[in-house]
Figure 1 (cartoon, rainbow, N blue to C red):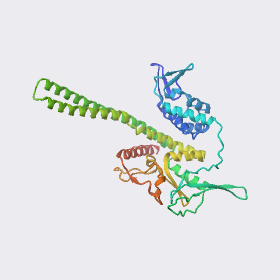
Figure 2 (figure 1 turned 135 degrees about the vertical axis):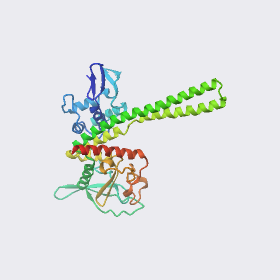
Figure 3 (figure 1 turned 120 degrees about the vertical axis):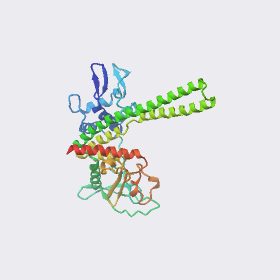
Figure 4 (figure 1 turned 30 degrees about the horizontal axis):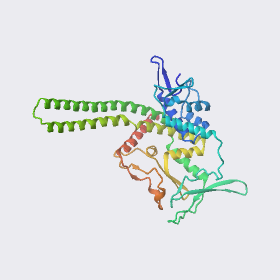
Length: 388
């Protein structure tokens, strides 16, 4: 019997993908390979996203361990201790599978105790004024109660930082949860968005077939022109060898251009579909993480959806990554004139006072990003209407 994520076809004796579960299984491998999850934590998150066993039962920790060690998911069948190339479609790559095995090995080894104190947000923020690292310290009151606070290291030699404030960790955590809540999706919205995405996929498939067929027709017309040109030359009808070669070269270039368009489209296809699907699953995960209250996992999630994290005047700020802004913002302008694209990497070497404050607002550099925003909001709007 095929493992979870696949279905057996009794008539053809073939194995094919269970589309509904395959994406969640891929997400399981990606999450574990990051090294930020234990098997127990992974079980809570993925079960919370809706992955179920064959009898609609919740998966156990051992189920997840077996899944992560099963080479079937990258295309290899293990039988009686031997390995064979399978004919089924892989869900993950061999590289991702190997990364999971390495992560599992690391977690099975005793960890060395680091002499440095652990602080949840150490190295995570930069000062919103001078751009240097935010550090942390822990104080213990006479009552024995301890508290952690964060402050600027003030090590920028080119700027005298005026940030003399100390921000309590719980205040930061509260602000972080507020930001995560912005990308969280209610279950009914997520369900309806996935249904709308499936409809978009079917529509895109039909449109793709028409588009590729048109290109194939163009290619056939060019090939016919090349053949007609050759016949004219052979028959000696008003064509010198130089004219024939020049016209043939022009037609061959047109044919190569058309073939390249076909290859590019077949390679890229409708790749915007899967990123949106991944975002929907991650937005569902945000709700689960908030309910569990695990600040470490919430922080990991925040790193995935944002960048350029700063702390200034006890206020936490950052830039949502491309795509997530469509979840947070309202409906996009049809011309995309108000949409902006920001930097997703920390410009640590070139930071100057107050430069981080404007890092999210740069001109949109490619129309496809605008289309990506429009697609997300179109699906979101349909799901919202359906929910009501």
